[in-house]
Image (tube, rainbow, N blue to C red):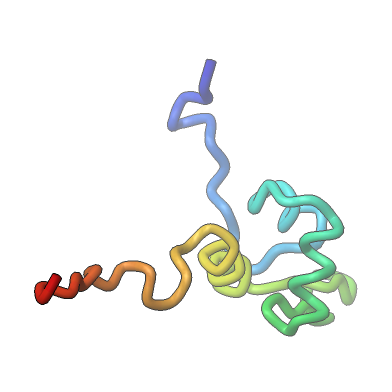
Length: 82
């Protein structure tokens, strides 16, 4: 049973680690990998110096994780000489 649309959270533009994990649905190890690759950057900008990451970083990392590899959408060309 899914959540009703009105029950879904309104995700903020910047998220702490726990919220970023809930937003993306990935595990801690995946989030750490994104950080080590520089895809997601947490900065001390939140309340009381909390580290937050931009939602745009998280969205971009998810696209890389689930998106088609570069060139995968190109048309397949067949050799018509055969």
